[in-house]
Length: 169
Image (cartoon, rainbow, N blue to C red):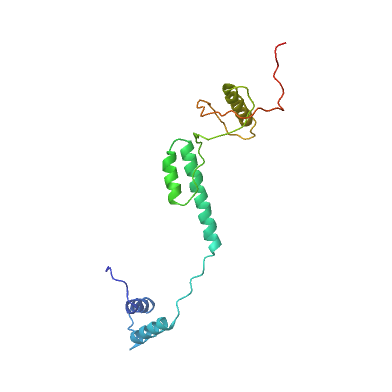
């Protein structure tokens, strides 16, 4: 058996022999039939490839990408894959990263006005106001606040409208 493809002539000869065993083909039949087949193939336009609806491909791709994302998330949650490796794969596929818990340290310059009688009282009043604001939040964010750096406090005018503290009698 040869590696070269069959020719039209060899296929026609085999077909003739299959249908008419032991009979010779009519004179010119092979040449004439081969020429007609070649002529027909040259004049025919290639059959149009039926278009694949783009939505079907888009939906399949979207489904595949969703499955990849969920699979990587599950593998990461079950410690079968590191979060950084999953992120690299997701990034290479232009998929969003995995939601991760982050612990963030911020130093925010904060200036606020408080009412106090001395420097330490001013810091304590400011820290209490911040604690009250942070504790009153209605979200699932956990905030730890450690007031260890006291940058400065500048005394201002006396507030004449403030209530008097409880004084000894």
